[in-house]
Image (cartoon, rainbow over all chains, first blue to last red; front, side, top):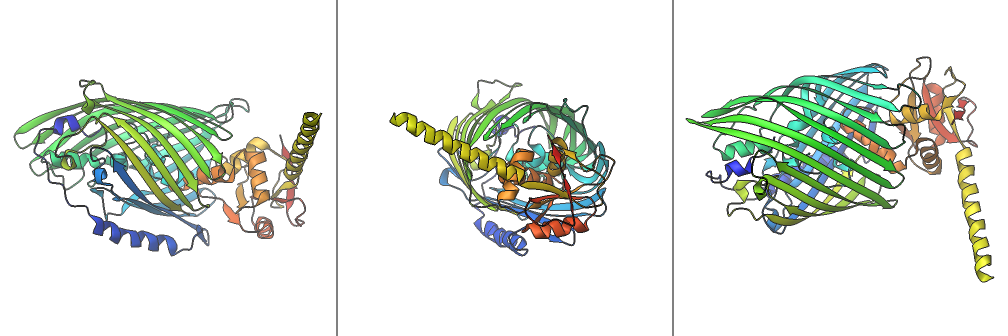
Length: 400
Length: 144
C-alpha cells in the first residue's frame, strides 16, 4: 500500500504548514537527555540493559519536495530517536520495551510511540514465543528499518521500505512464534517466524496524511487483523542467506465524514543477501497489491494499487571505519499506466558512511530519482511535480 | 637482481605477518564457568552462541556469552571464530536489541573482570588471552 499520488492529484490540497523548527528544537533536548543521562555506553543496571539511538538528517533536492519536507530548500526536519529497556527475568524469559520518536517533515512529531513491548519466552532454540507489541518480519529489513545505526544507507529502497509509512509496517500487537532449526551440520540453519495480531495505521504517518489530503481526517487510527511469517535459510555457503516473507493485512476505519475499507490483501517478499569479507550484496523482490474503498461524504473513491518493487545493492568496506555502497531501487504500480511518472519510481543511489567511533557515525548519500510514485505529497508540492529529481542526504547518528 | 631481492623481502614480510596473526589466534582461549559439563565445543556452536542464535549447549545447559569491549584479543576472537569484525559484530547485536529479539552480551573492559564474571556465573562463556591468569575457570578447546 502506498500513497496514491495519482489519485490525490487534482483534489483540493491542504496548505503546507510553515517549517516546524521549534518543534524539532524542543524534541532534540529530550532525546539528548534520554541518551546522555546514562553516559555514553550501554547501561546495565543489575541485569537491566538500556540502549538507545538518535539521528539528525538533512535532505536537499534539486526539484520537488520529498517526504513532506521542504527539501528543495534544504530541510533539517528529520530527527529520530529511541530508547530500549530490557531485562532477562530467567534463562528463558525476557521482557522489554522500546520507545520511539520521529520527525520527518510534517510526519511524526512529538508523539512517543511504543516501537515494541514484549515478553519473550524461549523454550529452547527451536521454539520460542513473543507476545505484546512485536516487530513484523517482512523482507530483509522491515523489522529493523527504523534502526539507522545498523545501515550504510540513509534511505532504504523506498519502493520496499517507505520511510513515511514505516511505523505502520514495523510492528503489530499480538503474538509471534519463532525458532532456529539446524537440519544437519551441512545444511545450514533455518530461522522461522510466524505471527498474528492487529495492526493500525499511524495517525501521524504518511497514509493518513494522504487521506487528510482527500478531506478525510481520522481521529482514531484505522486498522485490522494481520498475520504472516518469514522463513530464512542461512545456507551452507557461509554468508549467503535467502528467504521469503508473507504478510496478510486488512484495514477498516471511520473518520468524520467518511471512512476506509480494505479487504485482506497479501504482501509477499523474496530476498537474498551475501556477505564475504568486506563485501555485502543483497536483493529483494516484493509485490504489494492493495484494493480499498474510500468514502468521503456522499462520494465513493475506489483505490487500486498493485506495486511491484525490487532492489539490488552492494557495498564495500574501504577502510576500517569507512564504507561505500550503491543500490538501485525500482517500484512500479502495475494497476495504472506505468509510463506515467506518477506510477513509478526508479532510484539510483550512492552512499558513504564513516564511523567516528563505536557510538558516533556520519553518512552521506546521493539519489537520482526518476518518477514520482513514492514519497511525494501534494500538500507541499502545490505547483505539481517534475518527473525527475536529484537529492543529497546527510545524517549524523549516535547509538549506544 | 634488484627485483628478486625486493621480492624476497616482500615474501619474508608476508611470512612474518601471517605468523604473527596465527600466533594471535592461538593465543586466545575460550573460557567457561567450571561447572560447565563440556570438554570441547565446535566452532559452529561458538559462532551460534556468540551471535545469539543458540542459547543452549549440548546437554541443554544455558549458555551466557560474554565479551571484551575491545582490544586485540577481542578482534582476534571475532575474526577467527566468528568471521566478523568488531563493527559487524556490534551491528548484528544492535539489530537484535533494537528489534526486541535479543539482549547484547555483557561486555567487560578487562580480561580480569571477564574471568571474574565467568567464574561466578553458571553457563558463562568468554575468551581471554592464553597468558592471562585463568585458574578459576575452565578452558574449552574449539574444534574446527
